Image (cartoon, rainbow, N blue to C red):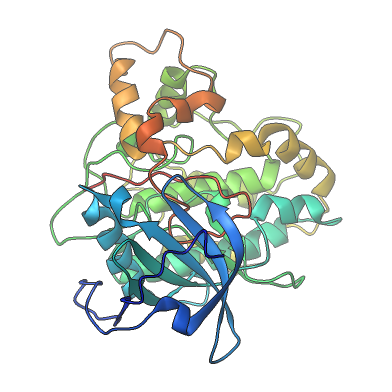
Length: 380
């Protein structure tokens, strides 16, 4: 493993303080504490390793970030660490330790080994609305916790939802806080952040937004979990963005014929165009589809898995869109003055800003075995 880990025996172990300043002194070598086992994922400037804590024999994931890759972007990793330091929730991947050497920064993360959401659904032989409801309840609980402590995730999507273990009844975990933001009092955000298809209308419309953007994303995820395809799709990015801004989506037949009216009502309240009318996490948790018994037990696995395979082939749904690329590309297409004209194929969207899109290994140590690079955000 020496080819991957640079050790200068002058590493500093960092205390997890509450002041948001992550990288402080206390001399230690990361290899004195952890044995590096194998690579879990790779980005252009960072790698995620499976490692074993020497003292406890506990397995963790360690995200190793090259300092030279952070030149001019130090605030991005500092923001991610500041967010992770504030978080302690059973459904959120936790940051457990921090190290620093002359050449690298190391984020020791809780190991999540149960696999990705879509893979597990496809592997199941039986899947119902009730399964989807229980999953979304866990996501809502975790995101409500984030909102209550002033954190907005800003990039909720299926590939950031991971199972904690391979157990049949494993809990779901939220990962990847690379685009997250600590909410400031009386300061609405306006930076275009997230992944097209999951971002709220107000984000693409370039108007100030708040934590309700996460609730919209949960609505999109809920929609996909019940039909296997996204609510918004177009070969033209301009048309895709226009659909989202207008909140134009349907419950198409025959895919939604066997889905309960309660489930549709739940989605409608989350995918509400007006953020002031959109359900909060707290309201969503009280909806009968989550808190009651309206989620159906009918097996919808065959239809859902077929649609997921068709619409979310790995090469497509693993593509990440740089946060700034969204708004730049949108301006190039002059969205708002015209919704016509060709746009790049969504499967090629990551090519728009290739240099920026290769700056960050999976944020928050999402530990994907595929190791696809996730964007480092310039979000403010």
